[in-house]
Length: 202
Image 1: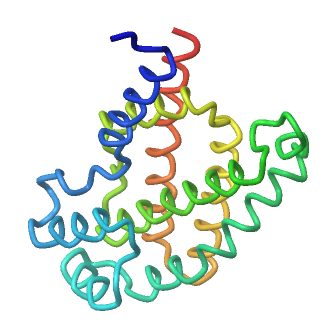
Image 2 (image 1 turned 180 degrees about the horizontal axis):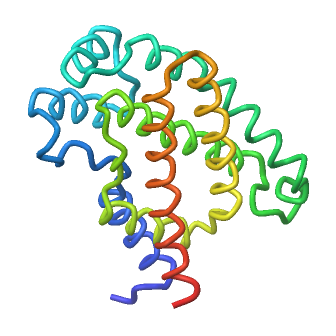
C-alpha cells in the first residue's frame, strides 16, 4: 500500500493532537491530590473552573476567589485587546498569504490563547507557577510546525496577556496572585519558545 506524504502528515497530526498538552498541574505532587483532581477534570473538559471549584481550590491553596473569578470573566476582553494590538503591529498576518489567513486560522490562534490563559488561571488558583507539561508542549510545538502556526506571533499575544493580567491583578490589590500569574506566563512562554527554537534552529 502506497502511503503518501499527505497521509503520513495526517497520521502524525492525529498522534500529536493526542499527545499535545499544556497543563502539567495535575501531576505535581506538591499540589494536594484533591486540587489536582479538580484541575484534571476541568482541563480534560477544556473549561474554566466553576465557582464551586474555585471556592474549594482557593480554600486549600490560600488564593483569592475574587482574583480567579476576575481573571476568568475578563479573559475575553484581554484576549481581544492583545490580539488587536498584534494585528495593529503586524497587519500582514491576516492579509492574503499571511500566516493567519484565511480567517479561520486567526480564529484558531485566538482560541488557543484562550486555552493558554485558562491554564494560567488554574496555576494562579493553585498558587503554582509551574503550569506546563513539558512533553505535551513538545508535541504541541511539533503540531504547530506542521500546521504552520505563527508561534512568534502567538508568543507576542501571550506576552501582552501577561502584561494585562498582571496589571489587572495588581491594580485590584492581588499582589501574590499577580506574581503567580506573571511566573506562570513566563513558564508557558519559555516552554513554547524553547521547543520552537529546538525545532527551527536546532
